[in-house]
Length: 170
View 1: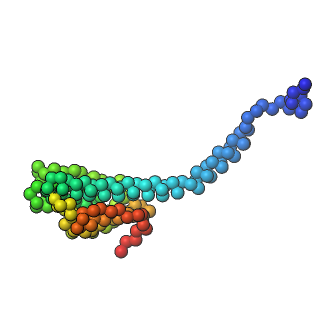
View 2: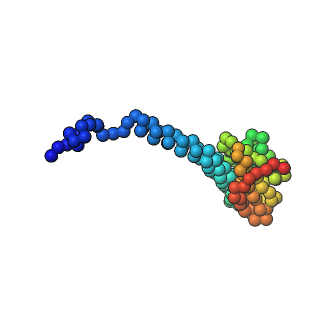
């Protein structure tokens, strides 16, 4: 039996040519270029959700500590530098004094900011009953103008996080 090489007269080795490999690489580059903006938007949205859950978690922790310690616990937001902290207000003056237990400050991840802080004095105080001193919300927005709202219900002290929405400044 004669080999294929002997029949066709060709002596070709198996594999891909350089041109074939270049075509495959170009196709892969085009697919990557087409999907990259979507991946960036998704990553930005995931970061927004994680940051919103972090702020909501801090508010829930403050409520739990207020009930557990029977002390007012204050969460303070700083819109200018994108930070927030909580502290047990042992003397009830609304100021974090030396010797009062504090957690934070925590920073929002890069590309995120507080768009709106709708609490008087940019803080919310939880009492020993678990209720908050006022209802309000905090809006966190990313660089794509997508936002989430963290809502505090004063009578119950419960915290809710909204779905992502398109943020438009007033």
